[in-house]
Length: 422
Ligand code: GLV
Ligand code: MN
Ligand code: MN
Image (tube, rainbow, N blue to C red):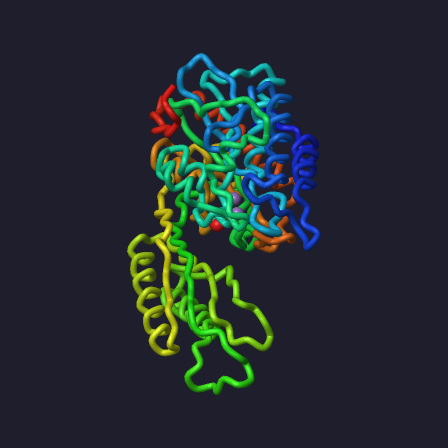
């Protein structure tokens, strides 16, 4: 049985507090990375970190880090992200940050120092909606997204990631992630229906899906919606509609091995009586199998060419942004399973169809994840919910995992941090 217990009341209070930051009048939470609501969430989380006895600061890539040192050189990292999708829920990301802070505070109050250092991570941009690249901040941290790309990637306001990073509007001190890392652990809601259907609360994650995303611009010819005969039109939205259906058909043909989504489309000039001359959209493909992703990408490119020819359009696909599929370290999966059992729950492992910063970290250091149940399987929605008892279970499993890793044989590796020298 667990001996040191997280505080369910404090967990809930903090989740609810963060859940008020970025309320969208249209529903849910909108905390786009680096926007004022996100900055406020970073500042509030930094305060929680200090309450937990951690030094809080923000690194060159906008990641909030709350840390304390241990006897060993290597640190255990735990956390998630504080940004949300537009009109998202309060649990996606924030849960992993708040729970990691709770573990730090519980350990301190129980006078149970870890041998390792401890660093709570709150990555800045995980969702990838604003700048088009998922897990942007963790990938920047390890140099997978270079500085020139950070200067190029712009959000809808025209500001680049680099512009935001230089501004440091949060006013927090500079910080760095410890380079020698024992392990990274992330608690997250499942965001899908599997746990609930199985009547389960918690699982260890065994792998993280691969994701390919690209912006697409379809150009036709805007003209009068009344006087232009139907034959010979170059209607960009007709091409977009065919592309939506093609992505669906191609993903369905892979059966349960892939999903495909066009989640964003902007029709221009966007007038009732004008044939659409231009549509800007995004295509997203996911599969746990790298080969399937490649096949799907080629097929989408091929179908785009066909659609362009058939409808007298130009279809331009941008550079594909790839997050490759990754298995999580089996030693970490086993550590989480053991922690789950210690908390009185049956062992279970699941794959993740959502992307996570743990996927990036796992390419360099042992990384593991804990999933807790999502009510109705819903996430990326204002209706995202997780029962408070499951939140407590997840945080307790995180604590048990950290305690187990602290005593386990050394697995530490060096993170290739991309910080500027000096
Ligand atoms: C992150 O939530 C993603 O899977 O897109
Ligand atoms: Mn998330
Ligand atoms: Mn998300």
